[in-house]
Structures are given as C-alpha cells and as structure tokens.
Figure 1 (cartoon, one colour):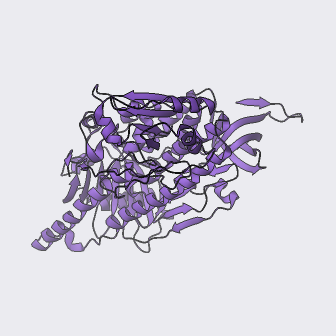
Figure 2 (cartoon, one colour):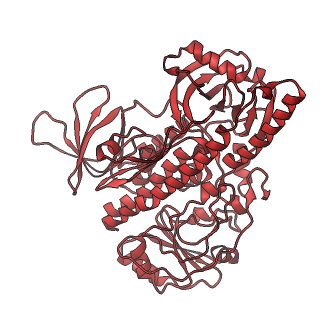
Figure 3 (cartoon, one colour):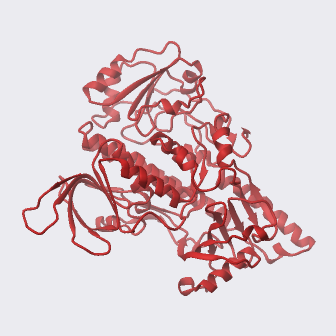
Length: 586
C-alpha cells in the first residue's frame, strides 16, 4: 500500500491501491487472500469492529474446502468448529426433546479426513464438506489475509462514497466511530458489502428473481437466537447431531451446534400475526422452549430477525471498474448453505482475473468474463436453494404428528419418509457442489462434448472445458489437485503424452505463469479423455486436446486477448455416482 501526500495541509495522505474491497465477510476476505498471495495491493474496509460475532452460515461445502486447500489452510478450517469426533448428522424431530422422525448421518471431521482418500464417483474429491460456523471461518480468513504484505485489512472503517472516471476509482472511507475521512484511489472497487450493498445501490443495479416467498418454514420472517444451553443434552432423548430440526404444528425451527458443547444457532419461523421486532429475552426463551418441547436454562448471546424466501440475483455484476460479489450480488434462502459458498467462489473467480489485468498479463476484457461466468452460476444456485426450501418448508405439520396414538404413529411414519428423502436432497449435494460450469464463458475453449446432467445429488466428473477438473488420488497417495500450479497448469497425461513446448513458448511470450505437470499414470489419461488439459488458476478446465498445435490461439482465448474457434466434440462417458452417506455406488 502506498501513500502520496495531498497538496492541502491537514489532510491524511491519499491512499493509492490496486483494489479497494468494501466488505469483510467471507467474500471480501477470500478476495483479499487471492490478491495478497499474488502481491496485488488491496485495501479492505468493513464498518463492523471485527469479523462476525453471530454464527451465520454453518456449512462449508467440499468445493470451498478445496479452495481453502489450494490456499494452504483447509486443515486449519477443518480443525475449527465442532470437535473432531462430534457427529455431523442432520436430524428431524417433532420437537428436539420429542420423537425423532428422520436422520442423515455424515462423516465427522476426523472421519472425513480419512474417508476422502477412498471415495470415488460423485465424491472423488480433495476435501469433503465441513460443518463449521462462519464466524470461525472469517477469523481464519482474516488472519491469513492480514499476513500478506500487500493487503491492508481495516475493520471499523466504512466506505462513504466512490466515483469511477474510467481510468480509476476514487473513494472516501472513514472510521465507523468517527474521525477524519481518508481518500483512496484504486484501479478497481469490489462491493462485497452485503445484502444492503452501498456499492450496488450507488451503481443503480436492480435485483432479478423472486423474493417474499411464503412457506410454513424457510419462507417469511425468521427469529434467530445465538445461545448457550449447557443442559440441552439432558433432555435430548436421541443421539447427538450437528443440526436439529423441529417439525410440529406450533413452532417450526432448526438449530445448529456451533461449538459441539453448549453454543447453538437457533432459528424459528414466525407464525401469522407474530411481530418479533419488539420481543424480549423472555419471548426468546418461550419460542426456544416451544421448539425444544422442554424447559432448560439458556443464556442468550444475541437475537434478532431475518427474512427467508429470497432467490435474488443482481441484474449486473459490473459497471466499469466497479464489481459486486457475494450477498451484494445474490441473496439466498440459506437451505443448502449455498449463499456463503457461492460468495467464496465469486472471490476465487475474480481474484486471478484482477491480478492478471493489474500485472499487465491480460486486457481489461478478461474482467468481462466475471459476470459472464458467475451470474449464471448464481441463478443456478439460488434455484437449487429455493428447491430445497420448498421441500422442507412446504411440508404441513399436522397436530396429530405428536399424538401418542396409532394415528400419531402413522403421521410420524409419513413425516419420516418425507424428511429422510429431503435430507438427502439438501445435504448430499455433490452435483451442486462440483457441477457448476462456465460453458458460455468467452474465455473457455469448449470442445462440444456431451455433458452429464446437472442434478443436485449426483455428480459425474468430466474434463470438458468449463468445469472443475476431475479429481484423483495418485499412486503415491497425493491429491492430483495438490500438483496444480498456483497460476496456470498444463497437464500432460499418460506414458506417451505429447510435446508441450508450443504451450511453454506461447506462455512466455504472453507473460503467463504456466507450469507443465507430467503424469504418466494411464488412469489419468483415461479420466481426462485427452492427453493435455489446461487448468486455470481457479482450478477450472480451460481447454483440453490431443496436441499443442494451437497453443498460441488457446492461450490468447483463455486470457481474453482474442476469440478462437472451439475444437470438435469429444464424447464423455457416464460414471457411477457415489453417495456420501454410504461411500458406495448409489
């Protein structure tokens, strides 16, 4: 970060930086890490005094964990949150202390680290999902972001205004508690400043999609409590879980364990006519007791309301040198945990592109691919979250569900069947996690291959350009992904892989940081269905082929220097998916 004295006396020096990031949530912090590791100057400001206090999102999907692994700290994230041996089950009850209706059992953190190395099919991955509160993830992301010399991370500072003159962005930031304003000039501004984004509003970008969806649960006003309940397990009649869901006619709710000991994030649906804005701690205890079906002492750490029923995507993700990302660009109902995970991938996608342009390794046109790639993904993912919310929220809980009678037994059996299917729909989602693709992107050299269906609960890997590279564990026990370069990787696969000198020469000419990784393992050649595959810095397949003849045009295309014709199609065979809940072919 450089500072240039202002001509006028009495003013702080002007801050000149490459990227100004408004917002210090997962998206902004991840972007600071992506830029910082590449030596790009960035200034992050967030009006809050620090990272999140409330738990917020609670599920880190496998693809996000793979990105944390790429940055070198997935093991740190997996050590956060629940104890290593704590169950990560999702369990459905009439009330938490009542009848259990259904349960999906998933690996503990300790089991996941071992099990991932033996899984194939849909769950062939470098990392499995992890159940950890966003508050802990943000702390880790902040710690790593602040360690980069080129990253200036300032909580307790807010963005007040900005203007884009076409060559740079001028902005004013100010301490949240008052004090002199600070002028900033940046090459780019990223609005990762949440659902009420100042950046999006000043740009005049409207929402698209739907909002205000009403359901009995996960649609409408929700009441949230961050609480301690040390005696919760005293009244729990069944095995511990990570998430507890209450299904009854009086109070629908869910509760996620934050620390595996006594802290929980509790969320209850409001009934028609209820107004929680003025509720007291006594009201909070009453609502919690309704979902619990018992009375245990709780300590309320915070409480408030939020609105479920969003499936919104901004109509634009960029205007000039200003971009929006994370909740500023898309709003989810949090079923599936897709909002936070989509936000992280926004930052991953944008980070390497900003760095390439700022370094002079790519033209400004490269940044146009951010909206082209991420906006369709946001629409896809909000659609999946809405589907999951409908599945859980439109179920009508009858009073008979809690009866001690044959009629009650029958109702509980029907509810159990429904929520057993729902749990697998929402929480076993390799297709959502790994199956996002950028087929319409201007910087993907497509090959016209037939693609597997996009479905939530099964994932068929394909090296067809535009998606996540197929994963494999190598003969020596390493993950293939661990061999990828931090920037561009050219995989040369099989015992007789073709020459790559043309790619290496073209990369030097274009000042691209390209590394060739040769792997003779025949199974990898079969997995990628081509001997050569070009992997982007964000671990997306940009091109694959049988020879390096078109290396110069390929590299020009993937860095937005010029368009190029796509090669002919390569067929992609189907593969058998694996169910994460069992680790066997589904």
